[in-house]
Image 1 (cartoon, rainbow, N blue to C red):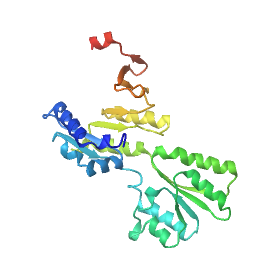
Image 2: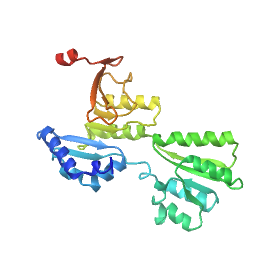
Image 3: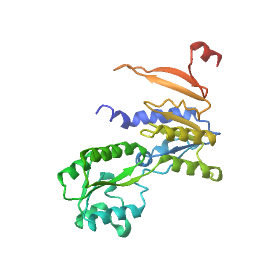
Image 4: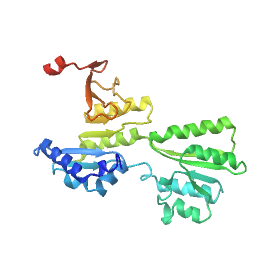
Length: 277
């Protein structure tokens, strides 16, 4: 399957690991933190840590917001379904998260709670329209990336004049988790020195993105970030090397355009500038 089999190619993985071993300085220690629990799962499932050089260590970050959901929040959601007799709507990710006494939303449904799995918050709005005599509660979970759909559902419900739709908001913010990690870093021997972020801060508002960059700069961290839309040229960043990758449709090559950010202006790097270093 295109773009799936290629990512699961053992030979390709071995080749990349070999290149990493060539580039890594055995006298230096490299520590990378993956932020999302999905990344941690992939690293563990495919044993990627075992093929990396000993000088490279992966550090597990705060994990996904579903995995770290407090038990009390799940208990509260189940109480809404079982005792308040609402229609509780949530993503499939939350259904198996363990609550107190070994229960879960799946078991809550087996006990008679009206718990429904949805793919979008707008599905919950639709359910509310179809059940005007029932209270419908959307159990909202996730980092900032999942908050815009929740906000859109609230606006849609208001526009439709729905009085039976509400949100049990359990969204969490990445800045708080990152700030705690960075504040405790000096006292930890496994503290990360290089932060790598994939599709960094997708869905996060501009103010929080600016503050996230500020935190990484204040704690003197090196960071590598990829994004389809984010340049990183914020006033909280004094200097940044930017590489724009361009691949024409179906082309077998990628072009690289370099920029430098000096804290105030993004400058295109010409061949003459690159030769001068």
